Length: 206
Length: 206
Length: 206
Image (cartoon, rainbow over all chains, first blue to last red):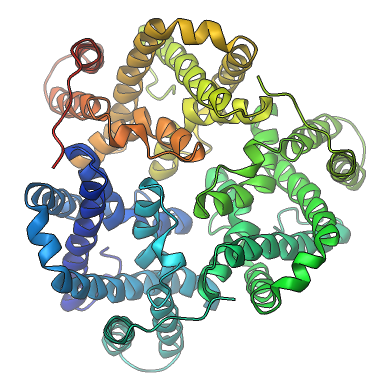
């Protein structure tokens, strides 16, 4: 979601990887719901780009990122078509998919939070923009599949983003170079999410 | 949704009260659906601010109001956390909650309609922006909880807003001071909604 | 969705017809779900204008088209009220409704794609904006009715738009007059959709 002009090259690489992973998760949801090819592609695109599009609309940076650099759209379409053709191999690679998804989560979070900081939002706004960038694609995927969004239930997903976004906000106030700030925050999200997956962590309900 | 620069102080006070009431209704919906803390907070924020955010996106006044004045976000988070910790006390205060909700409804309606008039929208646009400000937070709450939105069914809710928005549009064409116009319209919405609650009024279905 | 200043008069006429047809389909969905008058009107307005509103928000051309020319809103309200009063006659005119819906589909597609081209989007962006203009109203209608969106399943609907949008993009690169480009693309969409209806064409699922 090429936001930061001088963002570390690794962030851009992770961004593209995350786009593919998110698109694949959306496309898989479509395949499970017996959607046809176009429905699967739509779910793939929306899951991969929906969070960043919402962020850009709220920040009024239009057209949204993926219309400025269509590579994101082409990657999402390609990943969706591959999932449509070989869904079973993706079901089998479940662990690798979850890892890629966590990489995407951390990357999208730091991109969204950084962009909000560049637009001079405050603490709450910056964290919300980061969380939205990372999770709203999956939210729309679930709404379109007529389910209660997973992120409202399986919360060590979005709450890892809240921690990473808050960390990034505070590191941003220091003199640390931005590459350190970005990578530390992304790694925090990925580590929390990864540990939650491995250990089965859950937050309490009321 | 501090829109009107010289809006009567009472409107701003009612706006904050309405924000708390709407956030509590969203958080309660989350608790009922067994969401965890973060899900409950997300539903609280979205219910309290979603209508105003949509209005600001359509009017292109970005970032939306609650990112300019984060007090709205902090109030929504606080109300949601309190509901999460003590949901039963809120279930017991059902009548007080409905009253606060009606106050919020009338307040959000006049704020949204007034803002649309300031942006030179016409009759339909001004009424729609007011109704959207007042009801779309609840609409998104219901979509996220995977229900047919209540406002599409329990219509003396949104239709009270339509009446209030149309009244405000016409009073705005007169020489009345804007404080009179705003309060008369808000009170109309609150009175219709209150009477509908007490009397069980319903509009016919086809 | 009066986008193109010198668009052929026939496109504007078809646009208004399509608005009526889409509003009627939204209103019918509301009647079937036992919504009251206001719910039916809301579904009618959203179905008729939702796709174009989303497009205008993403392109940052605000306020969206129907707030600049409220005729679209008045037509949608009128069509919804008529459906509410006489739903059976519309159920009986099912074939005429499907034809009108196909006309609207082709018209909205060319209007959305053309507008995206005027805003200098690329190939993917232009096609997506056209498809969004034509189908997102119905998508929101289905979400509000708590169903998996029809367009994600019955895909010769949206895929007819993809073909028409791609055709329009390529014809736009040629020297053909824009009226020819627009009409050829719209007719292509309408013909594919019509043939799919008559023959029961379906795309494969995975």
